Length: 285
Image (cartoon, rainbow, N blue to C red; front, side):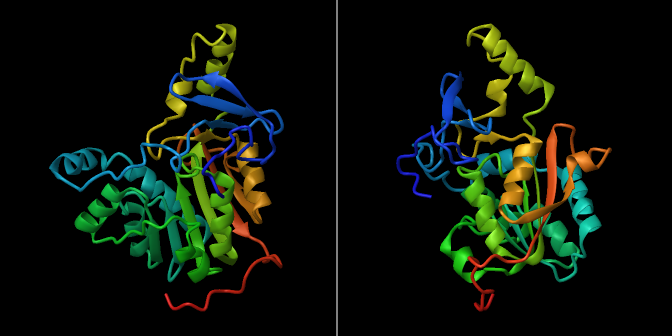
């Protein structure tokens, strides 16, 4: 999508010109769509002055990364166990979008999967290469590198804590769909908008005529790669299905929350290819 002059009144989910500014957060605004009730921030990385390069990996950035590196270790293992419940990872061609430091890729490699990873942060890519010898790609999933060379190539695509960060979630999932083989699976998780803290914050904002936003600012961020939209379960399930994926697992279908009670967890399987899809890639990988 050409985002050089994006009109935030166009909903990023249903694409209707039906969104209006609803919650002023000071440095940004949450737009709400009258048509589908999608909530998204008036911030795009592709338009922001904050998209300058992060600089070189140095001792300060290295220490910061290492201080937080182990925070998600149990979560990464839970995600791996979840994926292993759904499919055999041996020789599984996998794309991990938003790969971070490459830690999940290492877990997948240990199960015999053949993994490629995408990570937009130059610092994280540099650290992944230095620490784990994992070479992550900077090209986003909608880049020609993927869209011409890896059509219907992957058995598995993962987006862990990613869809809330991207500029255009629908386009991101549509791009990922094109890279999946028929029958291939996509897994993701993301914060839920249906948690009590979000709902209370909305009510208090309205009751105080915008003077108190409570927890709303903590759900969104204008920093590079920050949270730009928060979904409900129904919205995200509908988006995945509209992209051509059949839901095979959702948070609602499991009484025990796998990762967190604040998360939406979904797995979808690609249905038969549509006529608009191109033939499988013949490029050597």
